Image 1 (tube, rainbow, N blue to C red):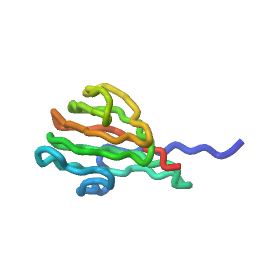
Image 2: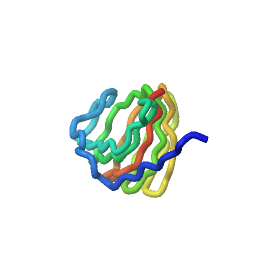
Image 3: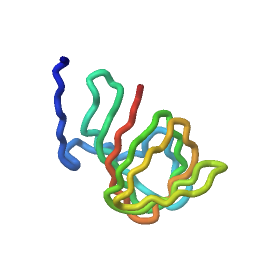
Length: 118
C-alpha cells in the first residue's frame, strides 16, 4: 500500500496573490481579489486554498474545474447563454472547465477552493 499523507492548512497562512487571476476581468464596479494557495499536489495536478473578493462583477473564463465551499458572502454566477445561479455562505458547488460568464459579487466573499489542473 502506498504511503498516504494528510496536508492540513490554516486560513490565510500563505502569502496572498493580490492581483486579478488569469481569465478574470473586471466588468462592473471595482472589485478586488486575494488568493491564498495553501496546497499544491506533488505532481502539480491540483491546488487548494482560499479566495476573497469585494463587491463588483468579473467576467471569468475557466481552464480547469473548481470545487468551491463558500464561507462568507453571496455571488450570482451567470454562464454566457445560461441562467444565473445564486450561491451564498454555506453552499458548495463546482464550476466546470470551459465555463465562460460573470461572477457578480453581491456581498464580500470568502471561499475555500480546490482546482484540478490535470
